[in-house]
Image 1 (cartoon, rainbow, N blue to C red):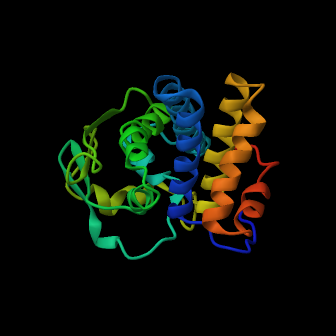
Image 2 (image 1 turned 30 degrees about the vertical axis):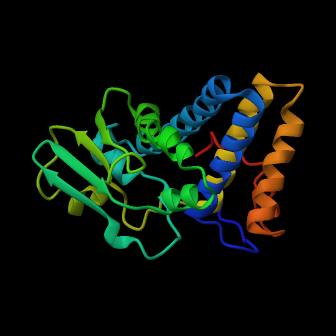
Length: 238
């Protein structure tokens, strides 16, 4: 599934794709309808990620618990320099994720669209969790676009104090379940295109062209061909 790329797509590009769709939808639809359309696509994208994680876990004979959720996480992050901005603390029954900065947030700010982060980030993690297992305990208590950090709490009786150093043992030796960021960029791009096409069939082509123009101007001529190289990918397939 990994493809040779003329440029390396990263979390920054993933954030930029979201901003491009956000700006175009808000401009065309207005705040209320644009928000509903943007968030519906984001939730559906997140749920699809969670479903892929769940299907891989079940394929391997593993339960849909918190250990599998962490073990089968897909994101393979490429951007460097923010390793110290996030922490995970496990206490019996709970994992606390604390993030004070991320490349998505930086790109939202750089593109003068922090509201995109306020809206998208308040639901994307919950959408992934629901796609994986909607009965799993999860809370989002803060968003760094409104506060000093993003804070998430994952609840499960299986969690012990050594959880963060042991959950990967759920995987087979040498097993890799991560997907490159170019895959995730194409996944979110495809989902937004799909939802827009379904909801606004007469206007979708023009709106998507506006999105592509924003992305090409920001990231250069080699960016769109990488996205388009995934056009035949079935993102439901594991």
